[in-house]
Length: 327
Image 1 (cartoon, one colour):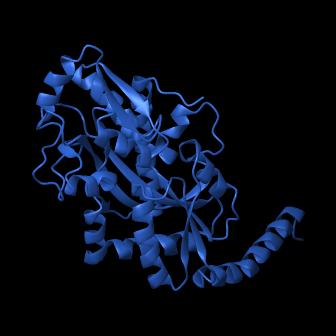
Image 2 (cartoon, rainbow, N blue to C red; image 1 turned 180 degrees about the vertical axis):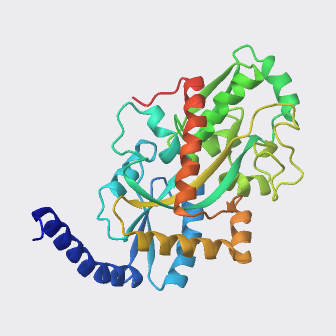
């Protein structure tokens, strides 16, 4: 006689076996409708620009529209919550960042999503470093000249960013500590406000994404004094690293990743990850990313999750050092 427990297990196994072919068919035919990519930040910033390049290539490769939807606010949290609460059917993606996946949980006492538990990790999509910039009329031509100048200012100096808790803010605070200078953070509502303030001399320096500032650097509207990567950045080979400029222990990179709502079918996650990895090998795409100041990068879902976890360890310490809070 078959026990009740064995009967239940057999029925469950049979039901799962019945559902598997249908689930696989749905996943293998994905996408069958337009896919929304939510960017939790304003249009024109690094995350938005790079995501739009990738969306264009995904559309060509997978045969459906990939529509970028900017959902701004609360340091990216509003957009992330929208993805968390979306159906796990493969038709909503978040273009998440270092901030939304590895920093915000240390800035906000209450977060409407759990970056570890609420998402299916797909792939890294880009990385860039920051660049130390000043206005073109600033007397400093090097970081050391800037530090000499800064220490002579009776009230200290100011640096701008796109908001409290952003990587440019945290990088500025880390620079203040590492360089031993008096510096006041001036938060703006976005890069569209912080950039003109620097150009006009309303703030003294910024340590912001190369992807955002590259057009201004090329146009001569700001002066680049150093990059925050371990080695010199390929599109700014003449600009020294922070270490070369005399500021040690200052490697700060930013990155983006695709995540989807928790419960999204694994086959869909893997298919999207594979598409991103294929696109990342395209020399034309690599060049377009470099032209905006970033590098293409693609990883497996498992590698993406592990990388974000390692970053959380590092940025928890930096946030504590800065004293930044978003409550």
